[in-house]
Length: 327
Image 1 (cartoon, helix red, strand yellow):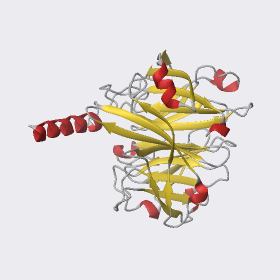
Image 2 (tube, helix red, strand yellow; image 1 turned 90 degrees about the vertical axis):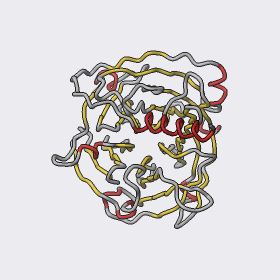
Image 3 (cartoon, rainbow, N blue to C red; image 1 turned 180 degrees about the vertical axis):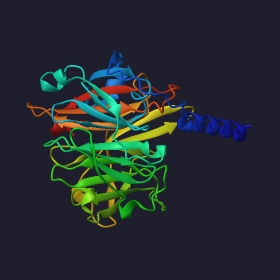
Image 4 (cartoon, rainbow, N blue to C red; image 1 turned 60 degrees about the vertical axis):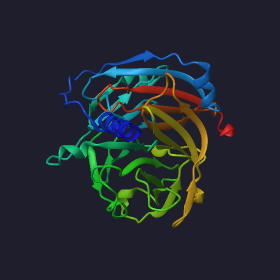
């Protein structure tokens, strides 16, 4: 009976994780609704030293405001999110003032090359150049990195040789552009060996420049997998981890790594910072972004991927703040 129960649970998990509703045509709507989520003290305590200052469920164009997997901050303060079906959302977060707020939301599809298979729309992560607004994405289906201009036009593509052998469905899941211009890319598949690590690539600059990256190994706490990354002003990197637990609960972890520990074949250990352990905030968080304000306080954003199904998952946006000295 226990074996049957395990098999049924595995089948259910596969259905929820891999099932996708039929693609819908974009409506052209630029509206995004923010429905506040009330979180209890227990959720806030688990997030310390990060402080929860806002939580919302997002709804909008059902073809595009869905399946969000990557997140970063644009120079004008708006958020840019990318998704599993090639969505590109520029979001005015609640409370934003100035030019970004006046510019409004921008809901559209990523500029894709004609003739590419539809599955190559599966965009998992995004990294922004804060000086120019250019941004890079990575797609796990064909292990590709793409550069876009600030206006969203596609500029160049590359399939890095270091990612050629990565499996198609667990390829580049997280990417961050470090303050010094280097790029960090994390793979989602576990490597062979007792450490159960994940692949790390540290490029000396833009991956499209063709330089070979340093290759290392990331050890995540417990059964967490790396699904997002965000660089801090001091050069450290927040890594977002995800763990799916029985019967069907998403647990999320925010951890820290220091790129100075990355070298050829190095073992890099992610140190836990904060967690989401069930409750009303729990969801399939895959995107993380970080920015520093004029007061020196750090703002961290999280976005969840609903897998385009609305079954036990939704599109949530969280806003967290912290003193960098506490991390």
